[in-house]
Length: 433
Image (cartoon, rainbow, N blue to C red; front, side, top):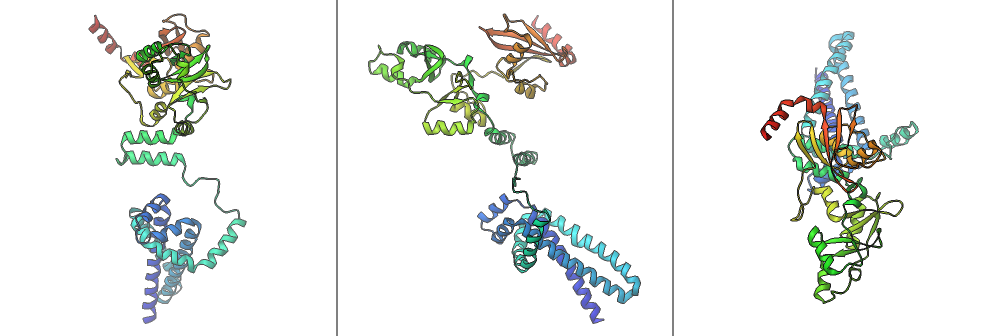
Protein backbone atom coordinates (compact mmCIF):
# COMPACT_ATOMS: atom_id res chain seq x y z
CA UNK A 1 0.00 0.00 0.00
CA UNK A 2 2.84 2.37 0.89
CA UNK A 3 4.52 1.45 -2.42
CA UNK A 4 1.35 2.37 -4.34
CA UNK A 5 1.08 5.66 -2.49
CA UNK A 6 4.67 6.51 -3.36
CA UNK A 7 4.08 5.62 -7.04
CA UNK A 8 0.93 7.74 -7.09
CA UNK A 9 2.93 10.62 -5.62
CA UNK A 10 5.58 10.23 -8.35
CA UNK A 11 2.85 10.07 -11.02
CA UNK A 12 1.32 13.34 -9.79
CA UNK A 13 4.79 14.89 -9.70
CA UNK A 14 5.42 13.84 -13.31
CA UNK A 15 2.10 15.38 -14.38
CA UNK A 16 3.02 18.64 -12.62
CA UNK A 17 6.45 18.64 -14.29
CA UNK A 18 4.79 17.95 -17.65
CA UNK A 19 2.58 20.98 -17.06
CA UNK A 20 5.66 23.00 -16.14
CA UNK A 21 7.54 22.10 -19.33
CA UNK A 22 4.49 22.57 -21.57
CA UNK A 23 3.70 26.02 -20.18
CA UNK A 24 7.39 26.98 -20.28
CA UNK A 25 7.52 26.07 -23.97
CA UNK A 26 4.66 28.41 -24.84
CA UNK A 27 5.88 31.27 -22.65
CA UNK A 28 9.55 31.18 -23.67
CA UNK A 29 9.06 30.60 -27.39
CA UNK A 30 6.18 33.06 -27.89
CA UNK A 31 7.89 36.00 -26.17
CA UNK A 32 9.68 38.17 -28.74
CA UNK A 33 13.30 39.25 -28.60
CA UNK A 34 12.21 42.88 -28.51
CA UNK A 35 10.13 42.19 -25.39
CA UNK A 36 13.02 40.28 -23.82
CA UNK A 37 15.32 43.28 -24.36
CA UNK A 38 12.74 45.58 -22.79
CA UNK A 39 12.48 43.33 -19.71
CA UNK A 40 16.27 43.13 -19.47
CA UNK A 41 16.60 46.92 -19.69
CA UNK A 42 14.14 47.14 -16.79
CA UNK A 43 16.40 44.70 -14.89
CA UNK A 44 13.50 42.38 -14.05
CA UNK A 45 14.20 39.24 -12.01
CA UNK A 46 14.95 36.37 -14.37
CA UNK A 47 15.55 38.63 -17.39
CA UNK A 48 19.25 37.72 -17.68
CA UNK A 49 18.46 34.02 -17.91
CA UNK A 50 15.71 34.83 -20.41
CA UNK A 51 18.17 36.73 -22.60
CA UNK A 52 20.61 33.82 -22.54
CA UNK A 53 17.88 31.35 -23.53
CA UNK A 54 16.60 33.49 -26.43
CA UNK A 55 20.13 33.77 -27.81
CA UNK A 56 20.05 30.00 -28.49
CA UNK A 57 16.42 29.12 -29.32
CA UNK A 58 17.43 25.65 -30.55
CA UNK A 59 19.03 24.79 -27.18
CA UNK A 60 15.95 26.16 -25.40
CA UNK A 61 13.61 23.95 -27.42
CA UNK A 62 15.81 20.84 -27.00
CA UNK A 63 15.96 21.35 -23.23
CA UNK A 64 12.17 21.63 -22.92
CA UNK A 65 11.54 18.64 -25.19
CA UNK A 66 13.99 16.46 -23.28
CA UNK A 67 12.44 17.35 -19.93
CA UNK A 68 8.88 16.98 -21.22
CA UNK A 69 9.51 13.59 -22.78
CA UNK A 70 11.25 12.25 -19.65
CA UNK A 71 8.35 13.19 -17.35
CA UNK A 72 5.67 12.04 -19.83
CA UNK A 73 7.31 8.64 -20.24
CA UNK A 74 7.74 8.44 -16.45
CA UNK A 75 4.06 9.27 -15.89
CA UNK A 76 2.95 6.63 -18.40
CA UNK A 77 5.24 3.97 -16.87
CA UNK A 78 4.08 4.70 -13.32
CA UNK A 79 0.40 4.69 -14.29
CA UNK A 80 0.83 1.37 -16.08
CA UNK A 81 2.58 -0.20 -13.10
CA UNK A 82 -0.11 1.00 -10.68
CA UNK A 83 -2.95 -0.16 -12.97
CA UNK A 84 -1.42 -3.63 -13.42
CA UNK A 85 -1.08 -4.02 -9.67
CA UNK A 86 -4.70 -3.01 -9.16
CA UNK A 87 -6.46 -4.55 -12.20
CA UNK A 88 -4.04 -7.06 -13.64
CA UNK A 89 -3.43 -7.22 -17.43
CA UNK A 90 -6.58 -5.20 -18.11
CA UNK A 91 -4.88 -2.33 -16.32
CA UNK A 92 -2.64 -1.65 -19.36
CA UNK A 93 -5.61 -0.40 -21.38
CA UNK A 94 -7.02 1.48 -18.42
CA UNK A 95 -3.67 3.15 -17.76
CA UNK A 96 -3.27 4.15 -21.41
CA UNK A 97 -6.65 5.91 -21.58
CA UNK A 98 -6.23 7.50 -18.15
CA UNK A 99 -2.73 8.84 -18.88
CA UNK A 100 -3.75 10.26 -22.26
CA UNK A 101 -6.65 12.20 -20.73
CA UNK A 102 -4.71 13.42 -17.68
CA UNK A 103 -1.63 14.53 -19.65
CA UNK A 104 -3.72 16.12 -22.37
CA UNK A 105 -5.85 18.17 -19.94
CA UNK A 106 -3.49 18.83 -17.03
CA UNK A 107 -0.13 18.46 -18.74
CA UNK A 108 -0.70 20.16 -22.10
CA UNK A 109 -3.89 22.13 -22.81
CA UNK A 110 -4.48 23.76 -19.42
CA UNK A 111 -0.88 24.86 -18.76
CA UNK A 112 -0.39 26.17 -22.31
CA UNK A 113 -3.56 28.26 -22.15
CA UNK A 114 -2.44 29.73 -18.82
CA UNK A 115 1.05 30.50 -20.13
CA UNK A 116 -0.29 32.17 -23.28
CA UNK A 117 -2.33 34.58 -21.14
CA UNK A 118 0.57 35.55 -18.88
CA UNK A 119 3.57 34.91 -21.11
CA UNK A 120 5.78 37.77 -19.86
CA UNK A 121 5.56 37.13 -16.12
CA UNK A 122 5.60 33.35 -16.53
CA UNK A 123 8.61 33.49 -18.87
CA UNK A 124 10.55 35.48 -16.27
CA UNK A 125 9.60 32.97 -13.56
CA UNK A 126 10.61 29.78 -15.43
CA UNK A 127 13.63 31.13 -17.32
CA UNK A 128 16.19 30.53 -14.51
CA UNK A 129 15.00 26.92 -14.05
CA UNK A 130 15.08 26.12 -17.78
CA UNK A 131 18.50 27.80 -18.07
CA UNK A 132 19.83 25.58 -15.27
CA UNK A 133 18.36 22.47 -16.95
CA UNK A 134 20.01 23.46 -20.24
CA UNK A 135 23.35 23.23 -18.43
CA UNK A 136 22.45 19.83 -16.94
CA UNK A 137 21.31 18.51 -20.33
CA UNK A 138 24.40 19.88 -22.08
CA UNK A 139 25.72 16.44 -23.19
CA UNK A 140 22.42 15.63 -24.91
CA UNK A 141 22.24 19.11 -26.43
CA UNK A 142 25.81 18.73 -27.72
CA UNK A 143 24.87 15.45 -29.40
CA UNK A 144 21.81 17.04 -31.01
CA UNK A 145 23.93 19.92 -32.30
CA UNK A 146 26.16 17.42 -34.08
CA UNK A 147 23.37 15.22 -35.40
CA UNK A 148 20.81 17.74 -36.74
CA UNK A 149 23.12 19.38 -39.36
CA UNK A 150 23.84 15.96 -40.88
CA UNK A 151 20.11 15.33 -41.19
CA UNK A 152 19.68 18.60 -43.07
CA UNK A 153 17.89 20.20 -40.14
CA UNK A 154 18.86 23.74 -39.26
CA UNK A 155 17.93 27.35 -39.40
CA UNK A 156 18.11 29.17 -42.69
CA UNK A 157 20.57 31.92 -41.86
CA UNK A 158 19.44 33.99 -44.85
CA UNK A 159 15.90 34.33 -43.47
CA UNK A 160 15.47 37.40 -41.23
CA UNK A 161 14.07 36.93 -37.75
CA UNK A 162 11.51 39.71 -38.29
CA UNK A 163 10.27 40.81 -41.71
CA UNK A 164 8.77 44.12 -42.75
CA UNK A 165 5.44 42.46 -43.48
CA UNK A 166 5.35 41.04 -39.93
CA UNK A 167 6.00 44.52 -38.51
CA UNK A 168 3.12 45.89 -40.59
CA UNK A 169 0.85 43.14 -39.27
CA UNK A 170 1.78 44.08 -35.69
CA UNK A 171 1.00 47.72 -36.49
CA UNK A 172 -2.42 46.70 -37.83
CA UNK A 173 -3.06 44.61 -34.72
CA UNK A 174 -2.08 47.56 -32.53
CA UNK A 175 -4.55 49.79 -34.37
CA UNK A 176 -7.35 47.21 -34.03
CA UNK A 177 -6.71 46.91 -30.29
CA UNK A 178 -6.59 50.68 -29.83
CA UNK A 179 -2.95 50.95 -28.75
CA UNK A 180 -1.95 52.67 -32.02
CA UNK A 181 -3.88 55.65 -33.39
CA UNK A 182 -4.73 55.83 -37.13
CA UNK A 183 -2.34 58.79 -37.56
CA UNK A 184 0.42 56.83 -35.85
CA UNK A 185 -0.29 53.86 -38.13
CA UNK A 186 0.11 56.06 -41.22
CA UNK A 187 3.38 57.48 -39.92
CA UNK A 188 4.77 54.03 -39.05
CA UNK A 189 3.84 52.77 -42.51
CA UNK A 190 5.58 55.82 -44.00
CA UNK A 191 8.73 55.04 -42.01
CA UNK A 192 8.77 51.46 -43.29
CA UNK A 193 8.30 52.59 -46.90
CA UNK A 194 10.73 55.50 -46.53
CA UNK A 195 13.80 53.52 -47.59
CA UNK A 196 12.07 52.16 -50.70
CA UNK A 197 11.00 55.56 -52.06
CA UNK A 198 13.09 57.16 -54.82
CA UNK A 199 13.74 60.81 -55.61
CA UNK A 200 11.66 60.54 -58.78
CA UNK A 201 8.56 59.59 -56.78
CA UNK A 202 8.58 62.73 -54.62
CA UNK A 203 10.33 65.33 -56.79
CA UNK A 204 8.71 68.44 -58.18
CA UNK A 205 8.78 67.74 -61.93
CA UNK A 206 10.64 70.07 -64.24
CA UNK A 207 7.48 71.55 -65.76
CA UNK A 208 6.43 72.81 -62.31
CA UNK A 209 9.86 74.15 -61.28
CA UNK A 210 10.45 77.89 -61.30
CA UNK A 211 13.94 78.67 -62.64
CA UNK A 212 15.77 81.93 -63.37
CA UNK A 213 18.59 82.81 -65.71
CA UNK A 214 21.99 83.70 -64.29
CA UNK A 215 22.06 87.06 -66.07
CA UNK A 216 19.05 88.70 -64.39
CA UNK A 217 19.43 91.52 -61.91
CA UNK A 218 18.80 91.39 -58.19
CA UNK A 219 15.63 93.50 -58.60
CA UNK A 220 14.18 90.97 -61.04
CA UNK A 221 15.17 88.11 -58.76
CA UNK A 222 13.44 89.76 -55.79
CA UNK A 223 10.31 90.22 -57.91
CA UNK A 224 10.28 86.48 -58.78
CA UNK A 225 10.85 85.50 -55.15
CA UNK A 226 7.97 87.76 -54.13
CA UNK A 227 5.60 86.35 -56.77
CA UNK A 228 6.36 82.69 -56.05
CA UNK A 229 6.94 82.79 -52.30
CA UNK A 230 9.96 80.50 -52.68
CA UNK A 231 13.16 81.02 -50.71
CA UNK A 232 15.42 79.08 -53.12
CA UNK A 233 15.27 78.91 -56.92
CA UNK A 234 17.49 76.97 -59.38
CA UNK A 235 19.58 79.09 -61.75
CA UNK A 236 20.38 78.11 -65.35
CA UNK A 237 22.83 79.35 -67.96
CA UNK A 238 21.88 79.48 -71.62
CA UNK A 239 19.23 76.72 -71.58
CA UNK A 240 17.07 75.28 -68.82
CA UNK A 241 18.83 71.90 -68.84
CA UNK A 242 22.07 73.64 -67.85
CA UNK A 243 21.47 74.24 -64.13
CA UNK A 244 24.51 76.05 -62.74
CA UNK A 245 23.46 77.10 -59.27
CA UNK A 246 20.87 77.66 -56.54
CA UNK A 247 19.87 81.17 -55.54
CA UNK A 248 18.86 81.93 -51.94
CA UNK A 249 16.66 84.96 -51.28
CA UNK A 250 18.77 85.85 -48.22
CA UNK A 251 21.89 86.16 -50.40
CA UNK A 252 20.03 88.48 -52.77
CA UNK A 253 18.91 90.77 -49.94
CA UNK A 254 22.42 90.72 -48.48
CA UNK A 255 23.91 91.76 -51.84
CA UNK A 256 21.37 94.56 -52.25
CA UNK A 257 22.06 95.89 -48.77
CA UNK A 258 25.77 95.84 -49.65
CA UNK A 259 25.00 98.18 -52.59
CA UNK A 260 25.80 95.60 -55.29
CA UNK A 261 22.65 96.37 -57.27
CA UNK A 262 24.41 96.32 -60.63
CA UNK A 263 25.67 92.77 -60.14
CA UNK A 264 23.88 89.62 -61.33
CA UNK A 265 22.65 86.60 -59.43
CA UNK A 266 25.60 84.58 -60.78
CA UNK A 267 27.82 86.23 -58.17
CA UNK A 268 25.81 85.12 -55.13
CA UNK A 269 24.39 81.75 -56.15
CA UNK A 270 25.91 78.55 -54.70
CA UNK A 271 26.81 75.32 -56.47
CA UNK A 272 23.93 72.90 -56.99
CA UNK A 273 23.84 69.33 -55.73
CA UNK A 274 22.89 66.83 -58.44
CA UNK A 275 21.32 63.44 -57.65
CA UNK A 276 20.00 60.64 -59.91
CA UNK A 277 16.25 60.13 -60.05
CA UNK A 278 16.70 56.56 -58.77
CA UNK A 279 18.36 57.62 -55.52
CA UNK A 280 16.64 56.43 -52.32
CA UNK A 281 15.36 59.36 -50.29
CA UNK A 282 16.75 58.08 -46.98
CA UNK A 283 20.27 58.26 -48.46
CA UNK A 284 19.43 61.58 -50.10
CA UNK A 285 18.36 63.07 -46.76
CA UNK A 286 21.69 62.06 -45.22
CA UNK A 287 23.62 63.70 -48.08
CA UNK A 288 21.58 66.89 -47.85
CA UNK A 289 22.34 67.08 -44.14
CA UNK A 290 26.05 66.42 -44.69
CA UNK A 291 26.32 69.11 -47.38
CA UNK A 292 24.02 71.40 -45.38
CA UNK A 293 21.79 72.23 -48.35
CA UNK A 294 18.00 72.26 -48.62
CA UNK A 295 17.56 71.46 -52.32
CA UNK A 296 18.92 68.92 -54.81
CA UNK A 297 18.66 68.92 -58.61
CA UNK A 298 17.32 65.61 -59.95
CA UNK A 299 18.74 64.32 -63.24
CA UNK A 300 17.90 61.30 -65.38
CA UNK A 301 20.21 58.70 -66.92
CA UNK A 302 21.12 61.16 -69.69
CA UNK A 303 22.08 63.86 -67.15
CA UNK A 304 19.09 65.97 -68.14
CA UNK A 305 17.35 68.13 -65.55
CA UNK A 306 14.02 66.45 -64.62
CA UNK A 307 13.05 68.06 -61.29
CA UNK A 308 14.03 69.16 -57.81
CA UNK A 309 13.80 67.60 -54.34
CA UNK A 310 13.89 69.57 -51.09
CA UNK A 311 14.28 68.53 -47.49
CA UNK A 312 10.61 69.49 -47.02
CA UNK A 313 9.58 67.06 -49.77
CA UNK A 314 11.41 64.25 -47.98
CA UNK A 315 9.97 65.08 -44.56
CA UNK A 316 6.46 65.21 -46.03
CA UNK A 317 6.84 61.52 -46.88
CA UNK A 318 6.96 60.88 -43.12
CA UNK A 319 4.61 63.45 -41.59
CA UNK A 320 2.33 64.42 -44.46
CA UNK A 321 1.97 67.77 -46.22
CA UNK A 322 3.71 70.72 -44.56
CA UNK A 323 1.92 73.94 -45.49
CA UNK A 324 3.31 77.44 -45.03
CA UNK A 325 1.74 80.87 -45.57
CA UNK A 326 2.38 80.68 -49.31
CA UNK A 327 0.88 77.23 -49.87
CA UNK A 328 -2.71 76.84 -51.03
CA UNK A 329 -4.27 73.70 -49.66
CA UNK A 330 -6.26 71.99 -52.39
CA UNK A 331 -7.63 68.46 -52.19
CA UNK A 332 -5.90 66.05 -54.54
CA UNK A 333 -9.27 64.66 -55.58
CA UNK A 334 -12.34 66.90 -55.81
CA UNK A 335 -15.80 65.32 -56.13
CA UNK A 336 -18.20 67.23 -58.38
CA UNK A 337 -21.00 64.64 -58.37
CA UNK A 338 -21.40 60.92 -57.69
CA UNK A 339 -18.82 59.21 -59.93
CA UNK A 340 -17.41 62.54 -61.22
CA UNK A 341 -14.07 63.79 -59.85
CA UNK A 342 -11.42 66.34 -60.81
CA UNK A 343 -7.76 65.50 -60.15
CA UNK A 344 -4.40 67.13 -60.75
CA UNK A 345 -2.87 66.18 -64.09
CA UNK A 346 0.41 65.33 -62.36
CA UNK A 347 -1.20 62.90 -59.91
CA UNK A 348 0.17 59.38 -60.21
CA UNK A 349 -2.10 56.70 -61.64
CA UNK A 350 -1.31 54.35 -58.73
CA UNK A 351 -2.34 57.02 -56.20
CA UNK A 352 -5.62 57.63 -58.03
CA UNK A 353 -6.38 53.91 -58.08
CA UNK A 354 -5.70 53.63 -54.34
CA UNK A 355 -7.66 56.77 -53.45
CA UNK A 356 -10.68 56.25 -55.67
CA UNK A 357 -10.76 52.46 -55.84
CA UNK A 358 -10.32 52.42 -59.62
CA UNK A 359 -8.28 50.15 -61.87
CA UNK A 360 -6.75 52.61 -64.34
CA UNK A 361 -4.11 50.86 -66.47
CA UNK A 362 -0.47 51.31 -65.46
CA UNK A 363 2.49 51.22 -67.83
CA UNK A 364 6.21 51.90 -67.90
CA UNK A 365 5.64 54.58 -70.55
CA UNK A 366 3.83 56.93 -68.13
CA UNK A 367 3.26 57.50 -64.42
CA UNK A 368 0.71 60.32 -64.13
CA UNK A 369 -2.92 60.62 -65.20
CA UNK A 370 -1.82 63.23 -67.74
CA UNK A 371 0.68 60.76 -69.16
CA UNK A 372 -2.07 58.16 -69.44
CA UNK A 373 -4.20 60.54 -71.50
CA UNK A 374 -1.29 61.40 -73.81
CA UNK A 375 -0.48 57.71 -74.22
CA UNK A 376 -4.06 56.86 -75.21
CA UNK A 377 -4.53 59.89 -77.48
CA UNK A 378 -1.20 59.38 -79.21
CA UNK A 379 -0.51 63.13 -79.09
CA UNK A 380 -0.43 66.05 -76.68
CA UNK A 381 -3.95 67.48 -76.23
CA UNK A 382 -4.46 70.63 -78.29
CA UNK A 383 -7.20 72.10 -76.11
CA UNK A 384 -9.34 71.31 -73.02
CA UNK A 385 -12.22 68.97 -73.69
CA UNK A 386 -10.29 66.17 -75.38
CA UNK A 387 -11.10 62.84 -73.78
CA UNK A 388 -10.23 59.15 -73.78
CA UNK A 389 -12.29 56.12 -72.87
CA UNK A 390 -10.91 53.53 -70.44
CA UNK A 391 -12.12 50.03 -69.60
CA UNK A 392 -14.49 49.72 -72.58
CA UNK A 393 -16.09 53.07 -71.91
CA UNK A 394 -16.75 52.52 -68.21
CA UNK A 395 -14.40 55.39 -67.33
CA UNK A 396 -13.91 58.64 -69.24
CA UNK A 397 -10.91 60.94 -68.76
CA UNK A 398 -11.50 64.54 -69.87
CA UNK A 399 -8.84 67.27 -70.10
CA UNK A 400 -10.26 70.18 -68.07
CA UNK A 401 -7.37 72.66 -67.96
CA UNK A 402 -4.02 73.06 -69.73
CA UNK A 403 -1.01 75.31 -69.29
CA UNK A 404 0.93 75.37 -72.52
CA UNK A 405 1.49 71.72 -73.38
CA UNK A 406 0.99 70.56 -69.81
CA UNK A 407 -2.25 68.97 -68.59
CA UNK A 408 -3.22 70.75 -65.36
CA UNK A 409 -6.64 69.30 -64.45
CA UNK A 410 -8.39 66.08 -65.48
CA UNK A 411 -12.02 65.10 -64.93
CA UNK A 412 -12.62 61.40 -64.23
CA UNK A 413 -16.13 60.12 -64.93
CA UNK A 414 -16.87 56.67 -63.53
CA UNK A 415 -20.07 55.81 -65.41
CA UNK A 416 -20.85 52.83 -63.16
CA UNK A 417 -20.81 54.98 -60.01
CA UNK A 418 -22.40 57.91 -61.81
CA UNK A 419 -25.37 55.76 -62.81
CA UNK A 420 -26.01 54.84 -59.15
CA UNK A 421 -26.86 58.39 -58.12
CA UNK A 422 -28.58 60.31 -60.93
CA UNK A 423 -31.13 61.67 -58.54
CA UNK A 424 -28.42 63.39 -56.53
CA UNK A 425 -26.83 64.87 -59.62
CA UNK A 426 -30.23 66.13 -60.89
CA UNK A 427 -30.96 67.74 -57.56
CA UNK A 428 -27.63 69.52 -57.62
CA UNK A 429 -28.29 70.81 -61.14
CA UNK A 430 -31.75 72.08 -60.16
CA UNK A 431 -30.27 73.86 -57.18
CA UNK A 432 -27.83 75.66 -59.48
CA UNK A 433 -30.62 76.67 -61.86
